[in-house]
Length: 627
Image: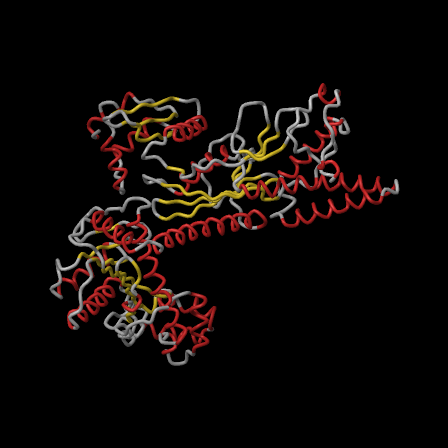
């Protein structure tokens, strides 16, 4: 649908809150969205300039629009989430979480049994959960069994059957794990009290149960029944030890849901901590795939609604890293600056980053574990996805690195037949570039690398990846052109963090298929060049290879230079400061020396953006031993 076509129907769309649905020419649902004002929101798709290819593609495919008016923004929010979950339109956020979670069921029967299940049956039974870990559920049930006497048999314990005396107590009774309701030795009321204790344990609320056991222990001790009192004492100790192992944030906290997010381009990772009476009772991290220009706040709001529904959360407080639009009634958002709630945010962030790195590690192991034929198939897929003229059995990737705006170096990694060829890795100290200039640095190191290969008559790679996007790609192509290598190998740019691939001269980027082996290989190459470059950079700094420009100022020693860098983070920042600001750290005399140094015309490093790092000697053409 074009903007002109939409303008003819725009006036028919109401200004009320509601949800809108986009359909393509085959009447397939493409997208569901919510809006405070339907007309304004839908119009924005046809009047606003979007930066992503996917949004342009969505608008291009729209042939029909439907909308539903609702009473409030909250109703729109809930309806949108319900429709996305039901229809999963291809352009909506996709929560990649289709697991069936375990529950603990309290059966709807006399003297209810308690056990693990993944199936919810509408038979009037009570289902507690769901839980994120089946191992956690089994641990809970073992813990319950050792502290609360509930039956595990499948007998029909109706009053009629018990009065007939059809059953006899089993071994569980003699072991002390059951009170023998089958012979009428336990009342239904006493059994129900055990179920109340069970619910408290699952909520992490062990206090009432411990206090009850202490009362029982005192009563038994007063009756001189020390044997049974000792059994209760051991249960109290068991409960207190279990409570100590639980992640208790603060006993002063009420129920709350904690959420944090980490983002990698179109992929987002959200961690959820369910807190009840100050104890973390559930933790879950999920992966979300976005398709349009959704912000972190939009992705987080969508995922929160889905996860709260999945895990039946009734908490009225959301603890978040930043505010979001979440119109559910009665919900309070807290963005903590300190205290126990801030610690919860930090813990959630640790979990989400661990999940992301663990996922990357597993993807790497899947790639490394492939046979030669399987690795060749990955290269064939990459060749097809990038439309290369030949199989990329030899791939090289370049990346620049600097520290706090100073000390530029570069790294190059080489992959042959889909795996690292560490003997071909190279480091480069920059020789001809003053200061931090990523484009000039990339031009220099690419020129040095392929001039050397030509001189030594070595084979050229089929694919060269420039990590950094269009600017660095253009600089690299200048060197390729100067060396007369245009058309002899494919050179592409890889946008930072976005995994968008640019070809020279193309205005639009391309993205490899989501979760494909070819994308995993490109990610692996990118991560490896980052690791290799950063490792080299750290070694150079620790050896003192880099000279700090501040130490070259007469009257300024290493201690003062380090103090300034620690406070202001970079030489560039120090160059821009006034004498008074410097004097607060190093005193007026040394502040004047620093200020005069950077004010002198012709001083090394006095130009804009130049930290004054002298060119280091080349360390770039010696083979690197495998690490």
